[in-house]
Image (cartoon, rainbow, N blue to C red):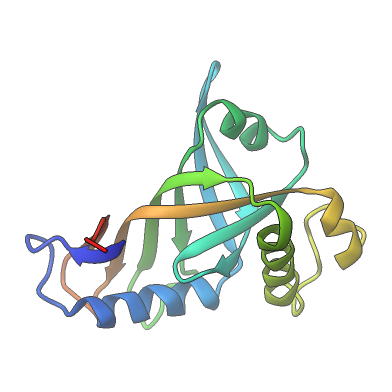
Length: 167
């Protein structure tokens, strides 16, 4: 699959936009995920780590609302907002797509990415330390749509979508 630019949103080259997306994701730790369950919509702040290009890893308690909601409906939307605004401008990244629970070595790599990304931060996941992360539920949020708001890139939001390419 490859990323394609919504031409109505910008004419910036895709590699330039993806570079900025990766920079925002790699330099921050907190996103807000939205889930929709039986009792309605819920916004939850979550720590994350970048994983495999534009995906995010979230480590959570097995019984958290977003964990149980994703078991029933594995779709997500997440917002990474840069705070405070950089140079007087707002920068945000909205991602939407599918949630998977990695297994085997992919799960090990995901937990490793999370531990490495959070190493400069206190592990605020409820985990007692890195080894306790393996007892948590691990989710990989794989975006199929991205919207970047950054006036250094474009005067309007830039939208990217994933499209299947012929093999």
